Amino acid sequence: MYTISLENISKKIRSSIIDMSFLGKAPHLGSALSCVDILVALYWNFLQILPQNPHDRLRDRFILSKGHAIAALYAILAHKGFFPLDLLSTFNKNGSSLPEHPSPKCVPGLEAATGSLGHGLSLGIGHALAGKILQESYRVVVLLGDGECNEGTIWEAALFAPSKKLDNLLVFIDYNKWQATDRSEEVLEIAPLQDKWKAFGWNTFEIDGHDYGAISQVFNHFPSSNGKPTAVIAHTIKGKGISFMEDDNNWHYRLPTEEEVIIAKKELGL
Image (cartoon, rainbow, N blue to C red; front, top):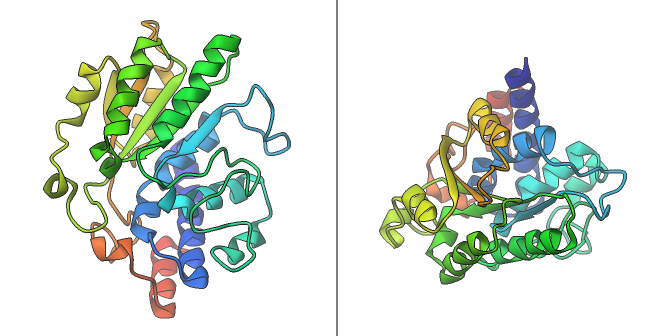
């Protein structure tokens, strides 16, 4: 029942994302769809952030470093009750509080402006280090794209976190194997990712990023007793959930037609 419930939530989130892309004429559908299951697992079964009090000093922090996938996070926050669902129809429109790339505090529950790739991990580390210094119990989660792992700032941050024993920091890499214009391995060979993060001093897991059971196992082992931060290499499919979008990088920038929206909704059973 646990898995079925999360799968149903994910279908609703994917449906909202497709509507948002169509109505707002905003791309990055494939990137948003690949991370939905990770976000659903985080917001329904892990993160302690209350919609009624999103600025609580002791709240967990979540940073979506791959900010071009913000439609997924907006949809998550709306379905969790951080703001009204009907606001999603204003995504990427003039005057909307839901810009195509997030701005700080544009809606409740959003921690930071992101999308200038490679910087979200450093932001998360700042939150995690502050928590340690202040002896506060909140946890910090950062979601990276695999393409971001080309950036030098990622690896500087990856060196820093273990040196400060930031065991309150959990990082997911949305490893969908694509960047804007090519396969990730063709742009810059980043494999083997798990070995790299482990060598930098992190606890590491390598999982199917669409398997709720595997994601929950990570939660069960966090934080660890060895004082290290945790990195999860989550293998995902770009465009996950819609057959004609899956693993097709045209959907990094393509917009769905009205007919394609209808077909996608039928596939989702909505």
